[in-house]
Length: 231
Ligand SMILES: [Zn+2]
Image (cartoon, rainbow, N blue to C red; front, top):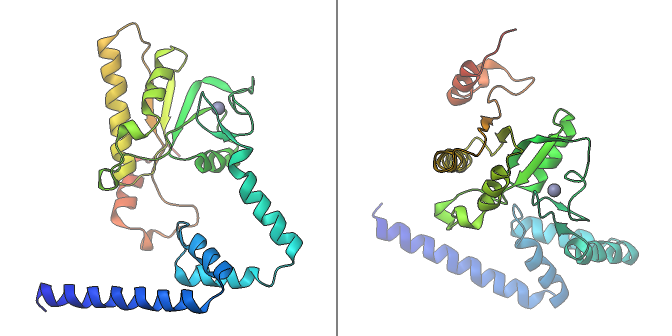
C-alpha cells in the first residue's frame, strides 16, 4: 500500500477518534469528563482504563472519595526532595541519608525514587542512594542537564565515596546514562588526580528466579553467561 494512503487512513482514524471523544464529552457530566481526562494523563492509563476507574469511583462512598482527594492534594505539599540524594521524603535530609547506620562510602545511582523502594525491599543494600530523576533520552529531549548528574559528580568530589553502583535499567537509555556517568567520573579524576579513585559497578544481568532457559531471549542469556559466578 502506498505511503500516502496509509497516512491518509491513519489521519482519518485519528479524526474519527477525536470526534467520538468530543461527542462523549458532550454527553457526559462535566465532573465525570474531567476525571476521565485527568486519569488519561497518567502513565499507562488509556481512555478505557480512565473511564473504568472513573465509573468505579462513582460507586465509592463520599468519605472514601474525600480521603482519596485529600491524599492527592497532600502528595506534593507534604513531601520534599532530599538535597543530598534527591530521594523524596518528609524531611531533608531524607531518612536514609540521616541514618547513621548506613555505609556512606557506597552509593547506588537509580533512575527514580521508586527504585529505592525496590532495592530496600531486598534488605541487601546498606549504602546510600542518588536519584537521577530519569535517564538520558535524546528522543524525548532529556539530556544530562535535566538529570541530577552534576549533583552526583559534586558528591563524588567530596572524597567519601569508594564505590558507585550505577543501577539504571539495562535498556538503551539506562546503559547510555551509565556510560555517560562513568565517562564524566573518569574525566573528573584525570583533570584532578587528588579526587579519590571510585570503583564504578553495574548491577548483574541474568535470568530471573524461576525462569526457564528455554524461554530466555538471547541477550538475557548471553548476559547471564558473561555474569556467571563461582558456585
Ligand atoms: Zn537522602
